[in-house]
Length: 135
Image (cartoon, rainbow, N blue to C red):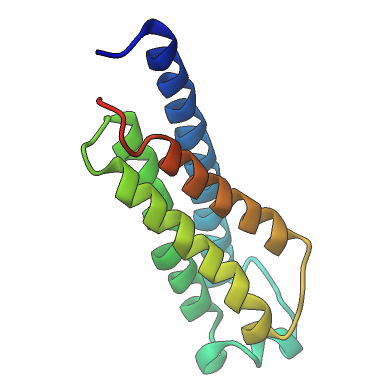
């Protein structure tokens, strides 16, 4: 049986996980649409470094690797799904992998990479905090 303070703590952790993963998903989808739709211009030097020299491919991969897993995390946590912890941990690791590999692919460093890396780490930590809690 969990105490009132444990339930309140779990609620706060779940709210933080929903907010963080939802925020990341929103910006990942916005970036994906911007890249795939041509609204974001990375410049020819960076575009030439992209796989297949394709902004559409880059946007699609951003949506698949970051956007959908983070959106799934937000929805699973909101619904208190039994699998929310492994889903969240996986999406956090995918984001960490994305920001770790991205500078090598595009040949550039941007201040958003460590920021989103911290958000990926936060998703993993929040998932860890919920790991053995009854729902």
